[in-house]
Image 1 (spheres, rainbow, N blue to C red):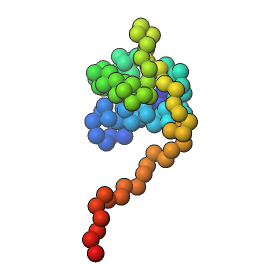
Image 2 (cartoon, rainbow, N blue to C red; image 1 turned 135 degrees about the horizontal axis):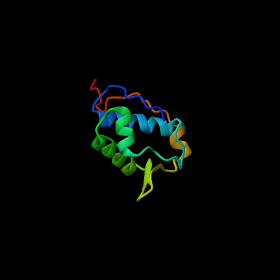
Image 3 (cartoon, helix red, strand yellow; image 1 turned 90 degrees about the horizontal axis):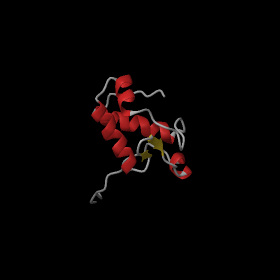
Image 4 (cartoon, helix red, strand yellow; image 1 turned 180 degrees about the vertical axis):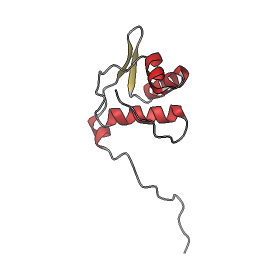
Length: 98
């Protein structure tokens, strides 16, 4: 699996974004097994705790499923979620008085 951290924010945030992007773009598919946390941490040169925190966040958001003794797997993702644009333009929430 090829992941590239973008240098924006904490390493955990970067890893979470990279994994989410891989799932949403279809590079990681439902049922794919993710690397063990120790292996991924070693490959990326980051702390295992950083990888653990990222996996936990992705599991909480419904992107990953953990199977005790077996590892972490990509959860089934709604096809509409994949089709949604990932970048949205932000609009101010306040009204301008005239």
